[in-house]
Length: 151
Ligand SMILES: [Zn+2]
Image (tube, rainbow, N blue to C red; front, side):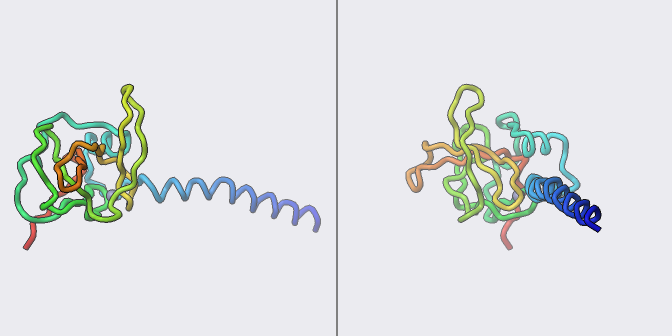
């Protein structure tokens, strides 16, 4: 009887230790969209960057919203998009709560990297040299976005 209880306690603590971190990991940074390309996965899950001037979204000027290509969360409204000349879709502000930021020290630079609040995937970096309205420039990989025109 004592032995069985002991095993039960062991079993429970083993479950707590192994299952909890797995669940935390599973909730964040999970592939939700099964149709993501290898390139999209590399950018979103390994913090990669697409080639500048490669995204068709650079020239997207219609009214609508830009959504996360992985989870579909609404991230930017078209009226915050501007032509930064950098070769990546650029926005002066995100929708409230759309992103969480962290400091990225890669390539010997200090940059503020942002991730989708909903699914956790990487989208781009935000800089303080944006247009006067906000002073922010969200430099977003086009491959991480899906544009849905308004109507
Ligand atoms: Zn997302």
